[in-house]
Length: 69
Image 1: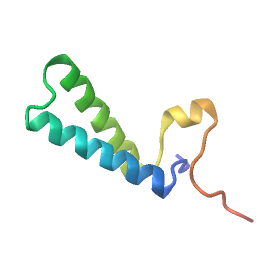
Image 2: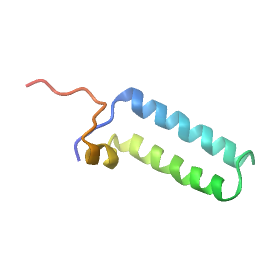
Image 3: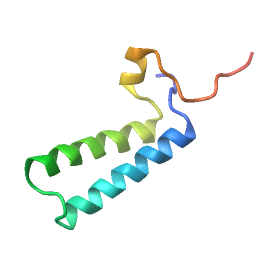
Image 4: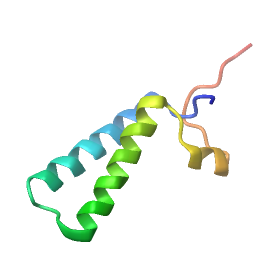
């Protein structure tokens, strides 16, 4: 897998995942919406850690710097 996520994108995703997790575990968001958002947070966190987003590949989007030969 080639990296397709830049540093800013990764940090934003991690911050969003942490906010969702805190809101869920403090009871601010509950029920089905809470579970869906928690799954989304887990996806954000995992894609941030590996610097690869499969959705970006499908749409041909890249937020990381391109390497110059």
